[in-house]
Amino acid sequence: MGYKVAIVGATGNVGREILTILDERGFPADEVVALASRRSQGTEVSFGDKTLKVKPLDQYDFSDTDICLMSAGGSISKEWAPKIGAQGCVVIDNSSAWRYDAQVPLIVPEVNADAITGFSKLNIIANPNCSTAQLVVALKPLHDIATIKRVVVSTYQSVSGAGKEGMDELFTQTRAVFVNDPIESTKFTKRIAFNLIPHIDVFMEDGYTKEEWKVMAETKKILDPKIKLTCTAVRVPVFVSHSESVNIEFEKPISADEARDILREAPGCLVIDNPEEEQYITPYEATGEDATYISRIREDATVENGLNMWVVSDNLRKGAALNAVQIAEVLVNRKLITPKKQAA
Image (cartoon, rainbow, N blue to C red):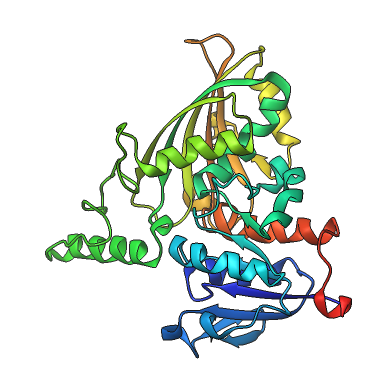
């Protein structure tokens, strides 16, 4: 007997990716339901060789549903996740609404799957920020061996992190440059075509943006609260996949070669690192792939026990949809939930 799974936000970038990944990975679902707002009612989305018609979230009964994969934004999650969880359906949420709640596990399965057992308090599990997910996948294996003291990360984040509107704006502005049309910025604060914007989410009182704060706070919650981390988050004119320049200071000595060997054996990581033959990963090459790619691993002579590396991953997959599905797989594989229909 399989599970009944609901996708909230099924018409969005991440929701559609979740449907694709559920099918690709053969998730044991007897029934998959696509949900969104009333204005999307009747919209068709693909699930493998099937077509699902979207149903309105506010009219759906979750009492016979086992897992809800939610990608509909923070305000929707704040309102609906507790209601859904109260009906005995486990919510795996992609927004930032529950990530910092002490009663809600924040999970990257390759890093801290054991923390998932706390989900039963609210029946809610949080998915981390897309930049955090790939970062901690790369940091965890090294932290286990050499203990990380401090991390300095600069992110180069694609426009898909801002949703379909972000992708549309990059496309429209790029076309406008070539045909000499006026360039309008509505989704981003400044022009994104052929430009970089060191501003993602709102600015906070200390000068950091909310996006930068998320990476710092979430890494500590997922990996180790003792790690010191600072971040600069930059939006770049790339459609899909986030890149990160990561500088790490360790308590124990670790060489670049040792780091490569460790990361080659680590779950979720794929090392492509031979600069002499131009073997390194770019966001274009990572798009559509599940791995967190790691390149340009090298020692930093300016600090004791320091390394630099380049980390790239598809933000719609590992940064969101794939990680959510992997969390659901942990629930199933560890027998932490039972299909309601079977239980009945």
